Image 1 (tube, one colour):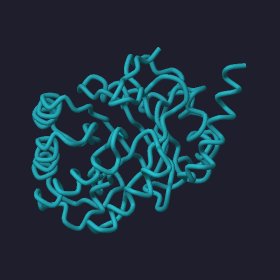
Image 2 (cartoon, rainbow, N blue to C red):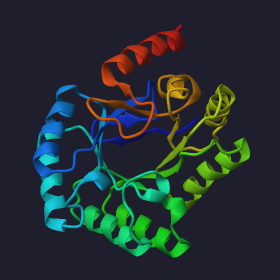
Image 3 (cartoon, rainbow, N blue to C red):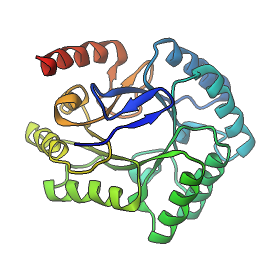
Length: 254
């Protein structure tokens, strides 16, 4: 049974999946408006997809955005994510620059969690970055995204185990299904996870949408919803997702 993690006033890995909404605008002003809209619908978590931000490599502007977010979001935990092109994002930079970006960000002490593409890093970069983040008492989501396929069950289990072994606090795996059998395999791997850490899994696209609202049954601790723009294919509007989670929660209780 996965252990839960509490960040601010949110417990991840216990009961229904936490709902996270992404912020994807590119400008400072638009991001603040988007954050206000997100805060108004009271998600459990908010993720800043900073790879969309046009001034990402200005530490001063990144810090300014983070400070504003903290004021707007209050007790809603903030995830900082700079998704690289290797994992389906907009960021095309050398590994050294990616590591420096995340280290500079955690030095502000402002995010509650940081998404790290741990399997894209060398062992030395893994150790350097994870140590730096944990020194700031910030939680790490170790993430792995597969936009072209759903790996074999063995591969998916190895991915989650590797994220665990490297030192991530939360283990994340996103895959793309070719048929409903792929969706079922992802759910099976999730249910069979033996990690003592919370796991986040999703099968992307319309076909995989079911994986986004049945996490309480299979063991996925966080699901992603939209307020405006989606950050990955298959995300559902937050109102619809809340209704679906409530139905599944009642089913589990009975």
